[in-house]
Image 1 (cartoon, rainbow, N blue to C red):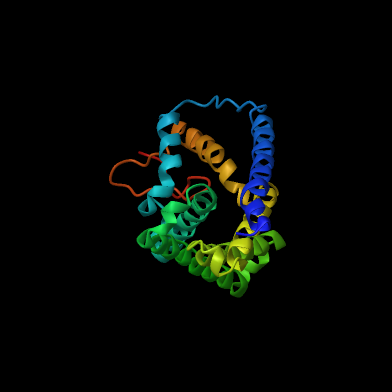
Image 2: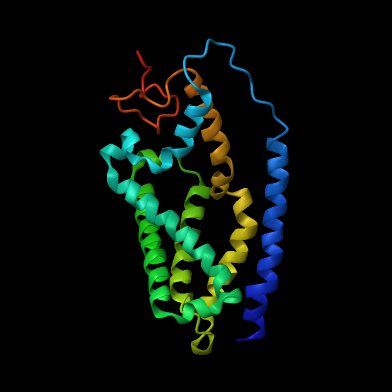
Length: 235
C-alpha cells in the first residue's frame, strides 16, 4: 500500500470525522437552545404514543399512503439506506479490520448491498431528471448530493475487495469521496438524518396529543402525511 493511500485511509479520515462531529455538536447545541411551544388545547390522545408512532413510521410502509400506492419506492428507499450503512461500515473495516474482507462471502454481501444502493441511486436521479414536478422543486444540491452518493456507491463496490496490490484507484476514489462527504454532508441536504428524529418526535407529539396518531384500530393512518389530515381523527 502506498503512503498516500495509507494516510488517506487513516489520518485524513480521522481529521474529517472529527470535523463532522464538531459541526454536529454545534448544531445540536443550537437546536437544544429552543424550547418547544406548549399546546394549550384539550388533549384528546397521548403525545408520547404519537411520538413513538411517528418515529417508527419509517418501518411501517403499510401506514404510508404514498407507499401503499407505490411500494417500489419503499424498496428503493430500503436498499439505498442499507447501502449507506454498508459503505460507511466499509470505511472503518478496510483500515481497521481488513481481515473481515478476506472472507469471500462477506465481500460479496457488501458488494450486493452497495451495488443495489447504486442502482437505487441511479433510478432516483433518472426520476428526478425526467419528472417535471420533481425538477421544479429540485435545487442544485439535490442533484449534486444524489450524483455524489452514486459515485460513492460505485467506488465502494469496486474498493471493498481491498486489494491495493492489484491497483489503488478504487480505494483512493472511495476514501477520497469519504473524506469529502465528511466535510460536505453537514452543509448539504444529506444531513437530514440529523434533524429527522426531532421533526418526527415533535410532529408525533403534537398529532398524538390531538388524537390523530396512532390511528384508531380498523382505520388506516397515513404516517407520511405532514399534517396528519389524511389519517383523520378518531371518532
